Length: 338
Length: 123
Image (tube, rainbow over the protein chains, first blue to last red):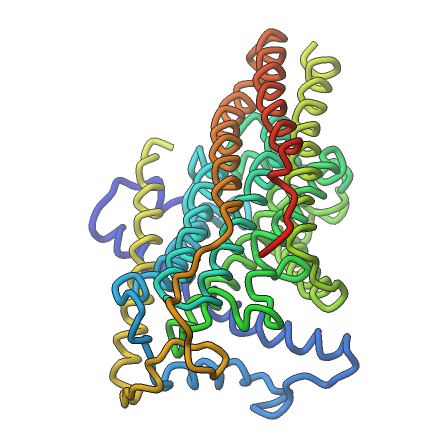
């Protein structure tokens, strides 16, 4: 990847980069397919059920079958819906979800775009998906969808603030917004040099806010089935619905990779004598653990109430994340700078 | 890194791909899926009942207040990011300045807290 990026730009090079991006798109789609399968299977086991086991060996083709079902299902747009916005919303949800993946580095040499403002790019683009949910909820012209969309937007903006502020500590430590530099700054030694221990407050705030940004249990209020039927996508059917689901799981991929990069040392081995194992293996292990962790808490925790949700975001996470920023800054001032 | 702009070409490629996938998938889907609309299918969904009134109902004013607070604190993060990147090169003065800035915003948060913006008593 690096050699392609350093060459002068020609149409041939753009074509090669485009083909790599297409390959990557299929990897992400494969990840989403099997993340859904894995989630259903893991939650099944945790609830002492078997989980999907009918389609293909061990039910491995269950999600593939689901996707084909959605593809050939009739696409109904309600008469009262705002057609243009209704059609636009699923695409608007998906575009930023896929675009943020461009800046994530996997190893020293395996990455797509090496932006100096990588982290800012991620934060800025992931904010756009809130807009898609509001647009989808509004355009459906449905009470459940509207309430679900408003709730979702309120939740996402409330948790975006602590999420964004909690990573400022990491930026302070590494002095860069470039995700590869952030990993390099954690590198080389033992696992306690990774950012998750020096930045333990920021790490905890980041994980909680990230789960909430993903709209996953225990923060899945926008999709609270028992009170809002399905939330903002209640009127969507067929492949338009699939794109909302797809962007949700693409964000699972993005958040898991981002957590690995920011706090868990990216491709670095946990101990110096384990350096002979390729970096991509470590990256994938950490990545898989975060994905599993997200499924695990879904099986463990109940959904919290909407008032508790907002109180947690503004009264606890925001002050704590600001405190973390200034603790880190004072620490750097006192012990590192001189 | 003499061709830094290439990285933005990659970003552009990702955005184009992100737009292409929904367009292609929904176009292919149009050829595959049936299309037999009728009045009942196109009615607004309200758990199977006949829908009552408009779908775009009034919602809580509280959402607007949250949006206002979000704007304030999101702007703060815009200031925090460059400050954090350049922190190693800056002096103690800038730290004090940022503490004063964040402190003023925290007073705003405390005011909203006191005014019970964060208290939620209906949907």
